[in-house]
Image (tube, rainbow, N blue to C red; front, side, top):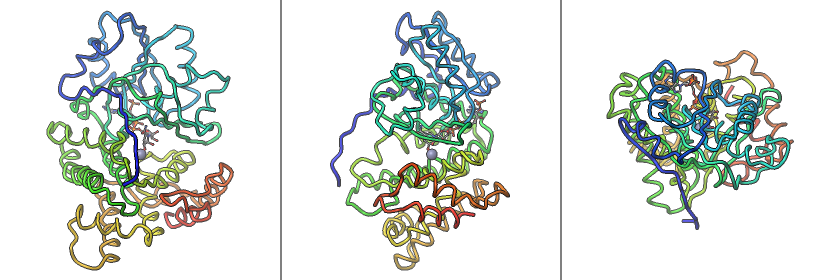
Length: 386
Ligand code: NZQ
Ligand code: ZN
């Protein structure tokens, strides 16, 4: 096992009715900017629950943060933070609203003129305004991590930042919120969380027995609850296991002391930036090709995944490893998620070359757990995913 240091400062309020406890977590006399997305919270009752819980607190609402949070919109919100002297941010939404809020937390304290530099600098974000979250869509783990992914339409870019300064102070996780989530977004959430685990597990054996088994448990739990969630999102038992699995998939516990990959996300983000494809679906497009291309370096973990998660006991290492990739792709299909780029756009020719050039220009010359995937390899993987 490799050395590691770990600190996660986010307080979790988990369970039925926890939204009502919001005000206890917000500093007294704070002026709060309540950030939300396209309006789902106004239709499903979450907005009323949040405002009722914040009775007596000075709240300024800011809606309209789109899925794949957009820099231009966030810059408007930054103007409100400054002009209204806001001192606490509250994200009420899925990964997009929470990531947008993290960006704002950092941008509010950023000393340069162009906060986009936070995303291009490649430096950990050390400081941010305090903020909390009410999670409405289990998927990204953003509610308990310090990552933020921001999109800039103008330049067709989608870039990530992270750092100790942008952990939420608290996050409220009431599994009942999933009742109103459309089936497509539920499937996305399952696929995203599943892939988060794979990115931190599907590398090479390093003798981290507990981390491996924790990762496998999250994968098994997601597989077990997925059919129940899709059939009936009011099933509280399934909803609560789904929600906590998504958080555990990306709250920083699984990568401790082990190599991680994250190439599937790096390539997937480009597909969202270029074609607007839902984040989780880009992962389902890239993951099978990525594992097939990197078969030799990943096959031991693929075979372990086959045995322990899929229950495949027949065959040698290569056969088990291939079967695990096929099972994973079939699982995405069962979720209703297509796994080829050409199923999302007719305009896919040239995608591999564009991504190869972008990675080269950014100096992303060695991706994956061995930092060995060159932009030309990335182009081959993307081509395999057409
Ligand atoms: O905008 P509203 O109207 O609220 O509707 C949203 C949105 O259209 C809707 N929704 C959310 N909660 C709902 C609901 N509809 C009904 N009932 C509810 N309770 O769902 C749609 C998608 O929401 P979004 O927040 O975009 O989804 P998700 O949570 O999947 O977040 C995706 C974003 O997170 C980034 C992705 O790149 C993408 O930008 N990621 C963030 C990560 C992180 N911070 O660690 C890691 C991930 O790998 C990912 O990259
Ligand atoms: Zn993801």
